[in-house]
Length: 305
Image 1: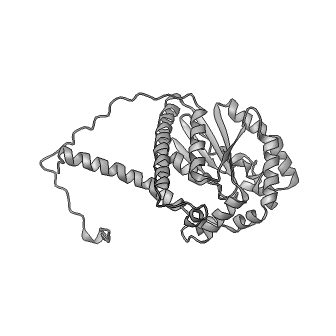
Image 2: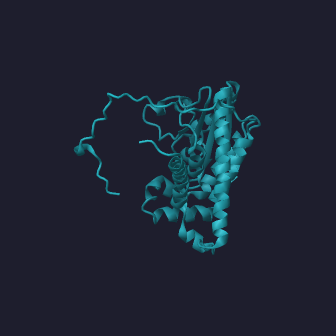
Image 3: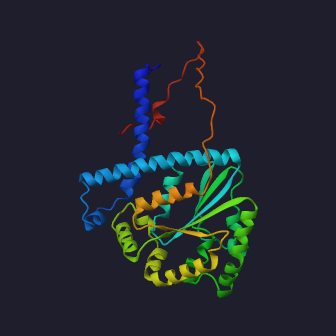
């Protein structure tokens, strides 16, 4: 069925609105009414609505710049690795979602590795991470990285003192090797306060849709807050090198943390907009002898909604 121009424009606008609704969905997922109440924030107030509008306006603008960055990465054959580290519930995953949401997953992909299996535990420590490094025209976002050894493995006793020290001897050279190979490496640490982590953990405990995010390891990390702090301080001291520095994102405010991180990330590159040839939708071929077959009722998904 051919659509007239007015109907077609309305359909396109509706599709754009649906795309924006995905953003609102993510925000609803993050929203914690208890937290809002404790801060004295009236979620129905004009100030709150204006704050949300400003946030989304800036987020959409930055995501548009990320698309330009993506095109430049492909055109120039860049190889980019971005590490996201921080305490549990610091907001790493939410920021990664906003970065990747409007990008091509073949260009920008996320590596979130599980705990090493028995075979991987016998390999060179960095081996399983190397397999996820980018080729030309690719960006890889590590949702936690080889710095697990400096954090959770150290605090929870999953590595020996010898393995821990070998990590610190190796990681600066490993990262310098990546840089020499043409990879751009950016390392972010998401920093939240003791009080903010407690609030976010409580929010997950009382939200059935988020309880899956909590593991026994998360509970233990909460108990060992001070040990994790000491491990982080040692990690910074020994791996914050001129060639590969750490960047700290203040993350007690999730929205500001996302915007600040994306803004900073874009500022690491001297990218420019790539001009693309105009896209023309070709007319569909129509054959008089073509008859579309009906779909059997037994395989149709019931239209409950």
